[in-house]
Image (cartoon, rainbow, N blue to C red; front, side, top):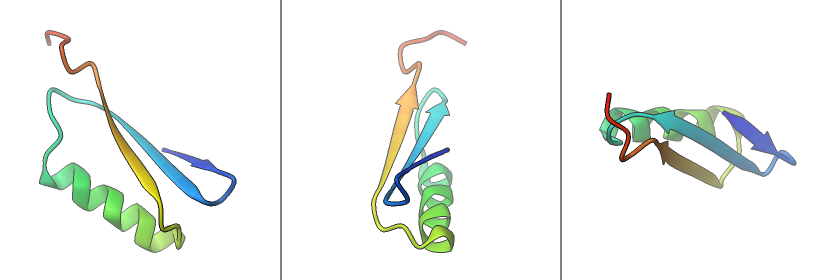
Length: 49
């Protein structure tokens, strides 16, 4: 997780796909930090595990 200038929260996930748990985690981070803008990024989408 990264916070840019206290206004943007960026969360990188290395997963096959994003699901509701990832979204809920991001929403929790936003709520607890008081930040209103966030990006949830999926890395390695085409990578074979």
